[in-house]
Length: 185
Image 1 (cartoon, rainbow, N blue to C red):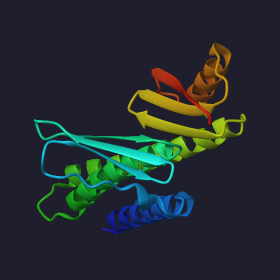
Image 2 (spheres, one colour):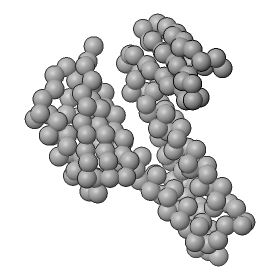
Image 3 (cartoon, rainbow, N blue to C red):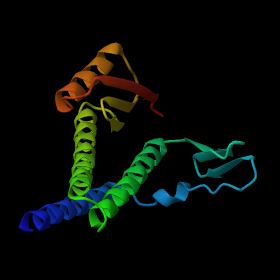
């Protein structure tokens, strides 16, 4: 019984730490770029200062949106964090469930820990790549695939190779590393 309580406590503490880091690193005013989609199947465009938000609802009900500005990185980070938060909530519900078996709870706790590890690796990689002189960096780890988006004035194969080597050193199990350069304004 003591081990279950310890695991639960450590999980909750790690969740609090991850959320605290996210809250501290999130710039203020990020909710300015929220776009609401009408139920009709049409394309809407809103302009907020220098940010242009385009939202389109397709016939099959899928909503696509595009953000053209420096807020692209922030929007992607928020989207990733929202997806992970939903997954964390589902996993926490499994852990808290009375009907779940011990194996299911253990698997859920392992997945929660893996999510925290991935978030930490992404933050470390972003910091390391920014230290190479890039203005903005976004790292997304998805299983064995790592996508790196870098805002830079110039890009070259050598710069991409440096970033790939840095990622390979930090994330050992990564098999596929993609580097994308965004033009710097």
